[in-house]
Amino acid sequence: MICLQVDVSSEAEVKNAIEYVSEHFGKLNITFSNAGVLAGGGPIREIDTAEWGRVFRINFFAMLYCSKYAVQEMAKSGKPGPLVMTSSVGGMVSTAGGFSYTCAKAAIITLAKCIACEYSNTGVRANVI
Image 1 (cartoon, rainbow, N blue to C red):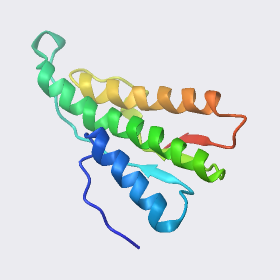
Image 2 (cartoon, one colour; image 1 turned 180 degrees about the vertical axis):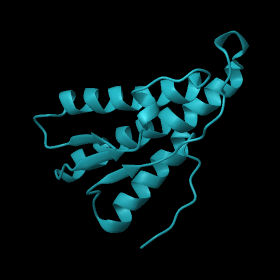
Image 3 (cartoon, rainbow, N blue to C red; image 1 turned 30 degrees about the vertical axis):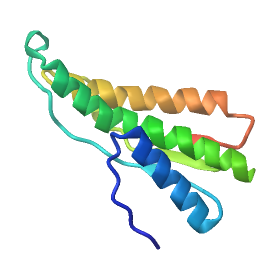
Image 4 (spheres, one colour; image 1 turned 135 degrees about the horizontal axis):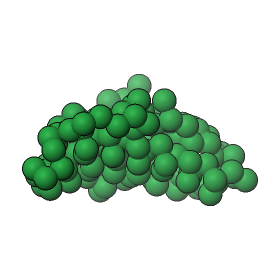
């Protein structure tokens, strides 16, 4: 077992972590991407776009980065596996004032669907819980 501290909002850090894990264990069998912050709420007319961006970098882009580099590592080894991502019921049911969180979580669901369609013939599976 290894433990890594990674800023999941940083593409470079996620890339390095995925590559390190793959090298350490000889291949990458599965990823479980789980990151989220609940912030950036309020009425749309008052949204702080900098905070919106921070929420998306953590809640959505972390999943994108993990999936992107996991698929690359799985392709190298020829052993595809599942990509598991955490979303939220908030990604399916909107609430007042939760714009950045619910939009990011909905984007994760769509990301998984796109990956599943794109890689359906390769053995890579994308799942959201």
